[in-house]
Amino acid sequence: QQQVKQSPQSLIVQKGGISIINCAYENTAFDYFPWYQQFPGKGPALLIAIRPDVSEKKEGRFTISFNKSAKQFSLHIMDSQPGDSATYFCAASRGNAGNMLTFGGGTRLMVKP
Amino acid sequence: DTEVTQTPKHLVMGMTNKKSLKCEQHMGHRAMYWYKQKAKKPPELMFVYSYEKLSINESVPSRFSPECPNSSLLNLHLHALQPEDSALYLCASSQGVQPKNIQYFGAGTRLSVL
Image (cartoon, rainbow over the protein chains, first blue to last red):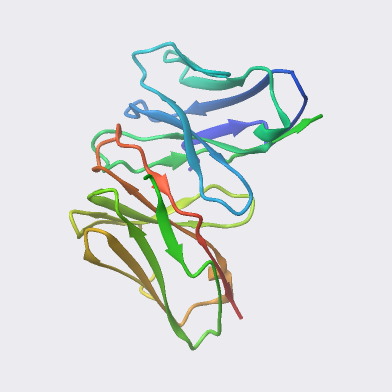
């Protein structure tokens, strides 16, 4: 059972455009929602994270929007740059589960110059 | 320094071989993790160590044997692997096992089983 569903699987955006990646979860016990960025040949790196008591969090060009009632959250990348081309994973974890991350399926983002 | 170092970067082994993957961190983290990542898929958790004790085993086959000799080092011993075990093996560490603790990942060991 896939507990975190991520869409789209792949995304092509022009330089300067907005990239939007969506995730939906099923388990209401999840209480921490990080996004990871992974470049080819590298391990995932934390990009930004949010807790369910916050509806939006912004760090530079990256914003997470969170809708607790809909059990959905999304990543917006403003002014997308070719250097943002990577695979993005949303994830979720719950406090009583030893920091176990449940990852979404991933989105391969390509930003065209 | 937020570096998790994994060695080797690449490993090719036969199904009868015994090999080990190594992971090291010097951030003082007390939780360490092994993940398996197949191509174009998300990482899948295998094991979690907390304060050098195995706290989570995600029903991983016994041909994978983790070991945490000290708080900075995590090993994954491999024996009698199958070709379907070929994947990128990622190590991660975090301050503790609470969700607010960021997991820092290494670059991984790319394993090929022939």
